[in-house]
Amino acid sequence: MDYEDEILIEQYFPAENMNDNTRNLCLSLINQSKEVTDSPRCIKSDEPFDIVSMNLYKKDNMVSFNGFISNGKENKILDGRIATSNGKYYVKTNVYRLYEYLEEEDRDYNLEEEFEFTDKALIRKTMYSDGKFFYEELEPLTEIDIDGFIEEKVRRLRLK
Image (cartoon, rainbow, N blue to C red):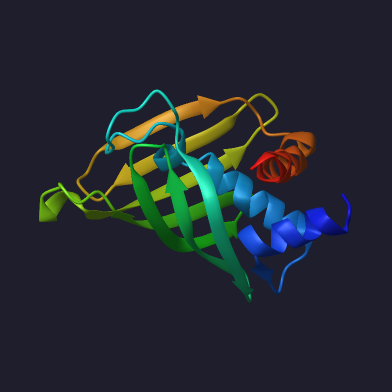
């Protein structure tokens, strides 16, 4: 990546107190969240949600994040925390839907997710605040996938 790429990363994905590898892993975990990949609470669109911008801040063993996702029809604000223990990643996310026609009770909710990396899959367990639970085995994330995510985001930002 060149200097201009680094500027785009700092503008759209600022990260404090962490190295590039930690930033890329955190962004990849957020990108694999049920809320981003196939949210059950959204205005249906042919396009999946995409991370528009995300701020990351690491303090001790916890990473806080806040930013925006969009699928072209609906925008959401995400904020939360990522922690790791015993080889698993725990993500607690608060979601604020920015669609003006929603009833008040449908606007804000939260979810908790557990991610576990195995040789054969990325296992994601998701629990929404309304009690809905989802278990999914996703394609495993490799180091190339994690680093490639940020490179693809920069490539798409350059096309704008």
